[in-house]
Image 1 (tube, helix red, strand yellow):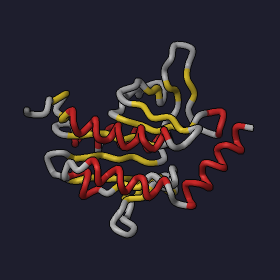
Image 2 (cartoon, rainbow, N blue to C red):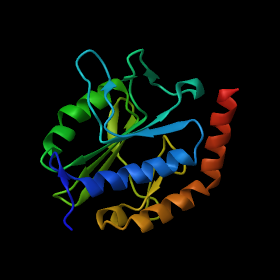
Image 3 (tube, rainbow, N blue to C red):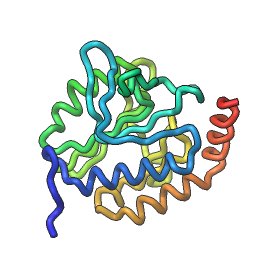
Length: 183
C-alpha cells in the first residue's frame, strides 16, 4: 500500500515525527506534544505546524492556551515536514518562528532527503551539529534523533535513539527541574 500524501507531505512522515515527539512528551511530565494545531505567534502569523513540543506554562513554558483554545506564543520546538513547501518552511515560516522566539525549528525536506534542525542563539538560528551521530535537543534534554534512521523510515531505530536519550542523566535532571517548577 502506498503512503497517503497530505498537502505535499507523506502522512507516514508526519506520523513518524508525531510519534517521536509524543513518546518524548509521554516520558517528560510538564511537556506536551501536538500536531497541526493553530498557533498564534503574533498579529500576523498563525501557522499550523506539523508537530511541536511545548513546556506547560505552569512549569515555565513560553506559550499559553487562549480562551478560544489556541496556542498563543512560540512553542519551544516546531517541526515541519516539507515537500513542495520547503521554500516557505525555510523562508517566511523560519523568519516568523525566529522573530517570535521558537527555540528550535526542525524542517524535514522530504524531496532532498535531508533534515535541518535550527537552534536559536543570539537572535539567529544556527544549524544543530550532530553529537555521536545523533541530533540532541538543547531545549528538551533527552530528545535525541537518529536523523539517518528517520530519513530511512526506520521508526524503531528512531525510537531506540530516543529511549537512550530518555535514560540519560540530562533528561532526568530536566524532569526534576520541571517537577520543581510545578510546586
